[in-house]
Length: 524
Image (tube, rainbow, N blue to C red):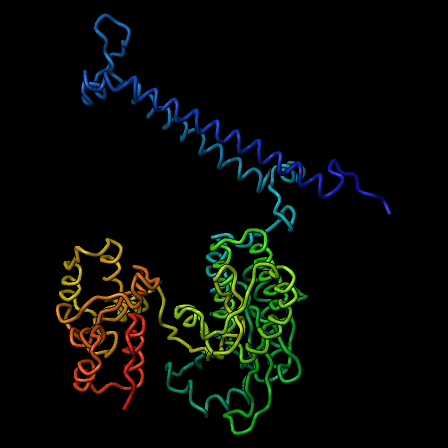
């Protein structure tokens, strides 16, 4: 086997070269900054007397520049005008050249020249077609181009209306659907798409095969697009699973259901490997440089994984597998800096970020900062939303804005006028956001009140680690505020008797008291 030659023979030498280069570039950057600061300081010191002598208007609008004359003049009007004209000419020259260069590289230039000038993507090489993955324009282009595919699939069955029949008369009725399946050539199917990934769900193998070939033909003839043969195939979900957006989907029989089957969803094998590698890398980063930022980065990654994959029905078992795969990394990489504490002893804010963890469960901590457990997640049912909600139509925008019109304008103005002089600017500004989130309701009781009838407080006080973020700010009624803040248990109970609290309201009430170091009120 031919040995590859390299200037850098091994990793240690490579690391040394990289460190040396980094030090050189860092030194050059420091010198550049010092030079700029020095020049700026010299200009300010030298120019200040001229400013006081001539005035700002005299300098800006005078056209005579004679600093060394017997009577010095410092007019820079021509200098400013020359700079503006120069910039304008540069734009007029540079933009067309750049545009025509891009067109030439894309359409006219020979392949060898394009290969030299095109930038290489790490891990992918030099792209020869398409838009860069992860680019801002990629999802927009997919929405524009594949929107026609959505409507074409829909017209095959979902929105099809027979000739001579008014829309809505027959479509949707059981009789029409049964007739269409038996006596027409319509293909029974529905499309689900995200960007350029889509699935067409069909009732039968025959319909799936027809959709498969028809879709290939439509994409090729109409949109001039090719599909990936490796990723595109007909799958019987009753026998095999299919991957979609990081999920592995399969249909299992189950009695006493509407159709006799339910969907079982897992994280895909590729997603499990990716998540495991990502979290391992973050653990290694914590070991290299144990900082608050890197610990928070790990916790945020865990939250992101849980929030995305929580709609998988088997999510707990999937993340349990990932957790077992991470245990050796935790033992070897964090052995010297880690410790464990029961979940019940972790901060309240930390406990709110996870679910289903028992009080006695051991939580890994690094520098008194706990790491979120991977298995602290429950399955959530994906809730469908109105297809009319969109930012691109008047009707869709109306539905979006309707949900944020719960707070009257005058009440919001009263909140905006209120400023507590004893609090920070951040607290006063974020109190407006908190009021909107609560929709003008009391945080504990949930009833609608005016702003002057409520007190704005922190859920967790500053002394206990509370911040001025809007998530830590709450509006509660004055009576509830007195009951929360008083140390006299009998007075608190007396005030609470006026309110018929349910379990949720009582939990919020007691949580506030505990955050302020006061005893909770037990239900009698």
